[in-house]
Length: 236
Image (cartoon, rainbow, N blue to C red; front, side, top):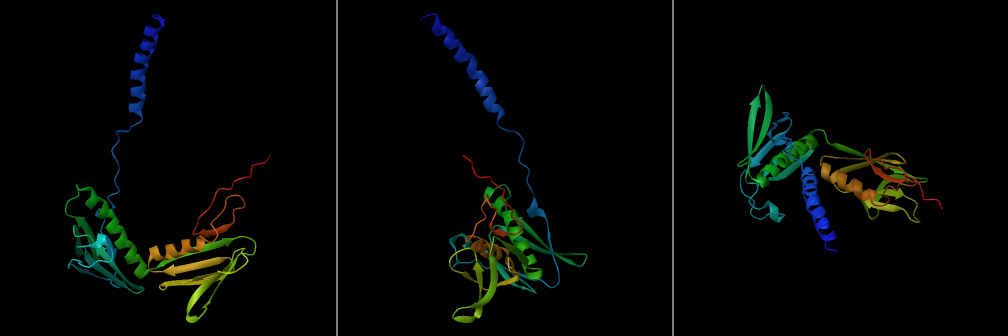
């Protein structure tokens, strides 16, 4: 027994450096590649009016917007209001007749400011696209007998609702929110349009919840170019 014990201890001592070496190899020393999207200037046309109110928001809708400033973006298709963090700076420029908006932060070494830099720039870009071109999200109904129509809302004809047959014993009726245009060019296709990409996609996935795509028969409600991998059922 005394002769076996040292050999076992020796094996453990040999194994320890090899284990730690393999553990160290799993970590990469390559630095993270940043997108630097915040540094890119935002061009916008003469049909877009952007105004920045530097007055701090003291009674915000959500607590995170406290002390933020207000940016209003107005275009042919509507208007957006965005809260801008107090450490985000906006600079309006003119270059060869084009209007440019540059986004910077006070201290790019701070994680919070660095993360909000690109986020703020992306939100402003989405708002500019929304008020000039708008967003269109297609929704597909895949299934036998699945169909959709747009009808006046029951009890309030001034509003509209989306009525769908999705294999239930009853029709599914969803009220169309303000700011979103909904059409059904085909019985199994729905087109959603609006100037706010967040609201349009939120409504699209609200519709999708009634029949999420399932992988065995690949039926359900698909948003955009969404696909789902087909699964085969287990055979005994």
